[in-house]
Length: 117
Image (cartoon, rainbow, N blue to C red; front, side, top):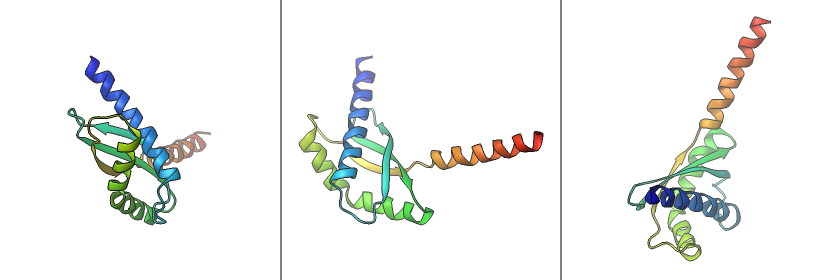
């Protein structure tokens, strides 16, 4: 039970700090408007899958993921300075397209609602 609480606490801490680093310290022009939506940690806390929502055109998604992947050593270094963790997990950035998916479902539901009226 304590491991689950620690896992959740570390995941939330990483999410918050990575958002902060990306918004204030990351200077890569290819990384557009990016927000960390979720962090999934491995059980041993050595790997972190960082799910990011990317605002903008579909073509900017790949550029942003590539930019974040190039900057992962910088981000890990910053996390090492800011967090009191024994080791900083290896970061893996993944595009989270749940916002676009939710929007497409909402459009379909509105279309169905209009057809029923």
